[in-house]
Amino acid sequence: MQFTKIGLIGYGEVGKTFALGLKEKPGVTSVSAWDLKFAAPTPLSLQAAEQAHAAQHSIQAVGAMADLCAQSQFIISAVTASNTLSVAQQASQSIRPGTVYLDLNSASPGTKQACAALIDAAGGIYVEAGVMTSVPPYGIKVPMLLGGAQSQALAASLQAWGLDAKSVSDKLGVASAIKMSRSVMIKGLEALVIESYATARAYGVEAHVLPTLQETFPQIDWSLQGAYFFSRVVQHGKRRAEEMREAANTVKEVGFEPFMALATADKQQWVADQAAQGVFQHLPKDATWQDYADCLLAARQQGV
Image (tube, rainbow, N blue to C red):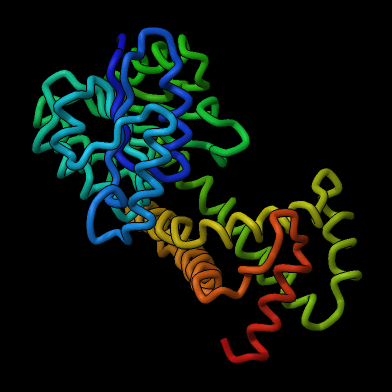
């Protein structure tokens, strides 16, 4: 597979990372992006800022999904979990036959299979991806597991560009099952750390709690890890909550009750709601976990 024209569905953190990272790759002549933020009813200031960012980096911001599909040989979907199926539905109405559609979104195997049915029926080539860790530290070299009939061919093309992409199965749903099973653990750990640390801070016993964690799991710096978990959930809690609802669907699809996944979604959403109310707005980028916990405790006292 060789691509010269790439299109991004979604121009958030992940979309920007892939747009900027791929536009310099050999053979790529254009990168375009479509995002709801490019159009009304987005506030004009945000719309202008997003379009300016795209223009500054030579990314063409298009006004409609149909425009993106018309000029793309390789489409990458990078939206929030709850929008995974809806953007696939939109893309299926305009995608050109033979266009590769790489779905990076955190969704259940069932959701990915439904997306594949739409894209494949329209003549596109659907490949699922499980992005196996946070994108920012790695950029476009973030480890990805691919699945689908054409996953090996696409993995080879992405590897030629220096990406860490590996095909795990020609069967759809395997890559997303790996990703979602991991998310139950990782996002659940984030939620547990936030609840445990904030509670310990409220009782003034954190100096006793963290050393016991360090003794049990000595390979982890629990203070730094706590700060990282707090920061990521504060910044991306809404997106993480959506992902965990898809993780809950993953659990349901094999017949289990998703007690932990749903509880994690609720905790992630609660932190996102706190952030939306400005609870953490004055914190610096290098804030400690204690800083985040103190903000939650202050908000509790104020009845936020």
